Image (cartoon, rainbow, N blue to C red):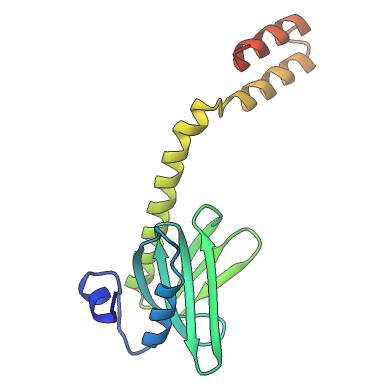
Length: 168
């Protein structure tokens, strides 16, 4: 999509003067097959201004300027924490903290809400799969093992419950 189409469709939050259109183009070029750009705005990464985008799969920061290209991508599934501090959005994947600053607060809030909404829908979609695959069985087995270790249930009771949980 062109810069104007992104703005018209409410995907690009603007204003266009800070993030060079090249960075927004670079962000779109980095999209994977089947990936859709949902929101994008200006942000300052570690070097200079670029475009911060949220897709249906990840958060992408793209910077394309005089000094080269920078691309940071964070899978929605791997993002552990996200926080808005003044005009900065801090996104952590458990190992790295990525700070994107100089955003308009309403734009940063929209990006934050969209990321949390997508993560929630990913968790909701994964829950039935985990249940069908016996997602709670491990926790139940651990509880049973703890009860057996404390002498509350016998080895035979543990074995019978284990078989039932595993569907054997």
